[in-house]
Length: 88
Image (cartoon, rainbow, N blue to C red; front, side, top):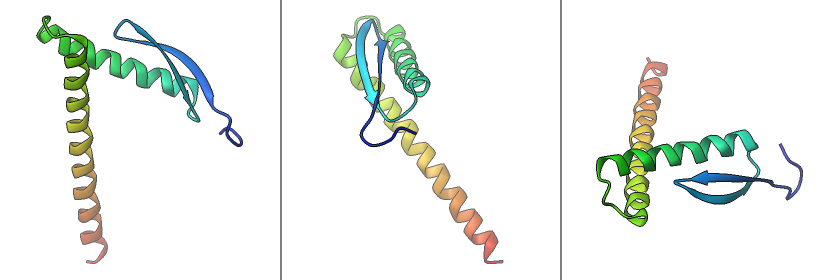
């Protein structure tokens, strides 16, 4: 963990564009995030090669939001199940 306001800074490439990421997370973690976004964008663009970068980015964001919502729902269901079991 970094002390104070220090942040790691890393250069990554997502969908052919260079970005500088800054954050308290490790450089390895930030690279993994960028790689995941890049992979998701490339999968979307393979399905329809006519989509522009903006549409690929928005569809990728929608797919990732869906993934997040599903995982949150699963977590909530597991928590409810654990609460139910602990009261038995």
